[in-house]
Image 1: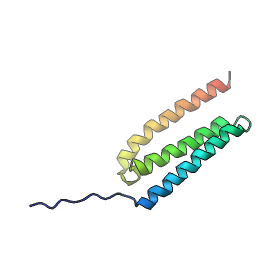
Image 2: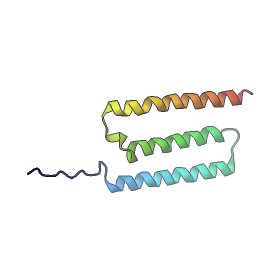
Image 3: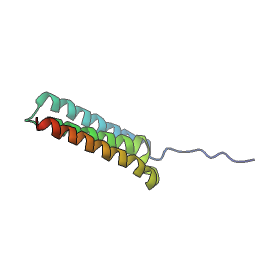
Image 4: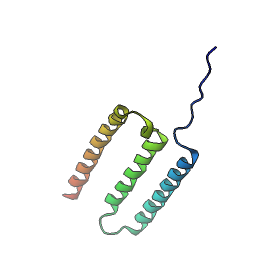
Length: 96
């Protein structure tokens, strides 16, 4: 009879708690930044914070940090293309 192997969480629960706390801190920073609106950098800063939050979710909660390189590469390329399209959209609206 085969023994069943029990899969464990790749990272400990403490790691997930720390990542969640960082995500909550970044959320608070986004809210405070939206209230302050310093100069015209609010959009760039908000998008940067959103990118960091998305990266944390991808790496830890979707377990891409623990996957092989090819799978992470297949996720990374569409994100780069999306970032290019968003930056081109911002540059187009900025120049109008």
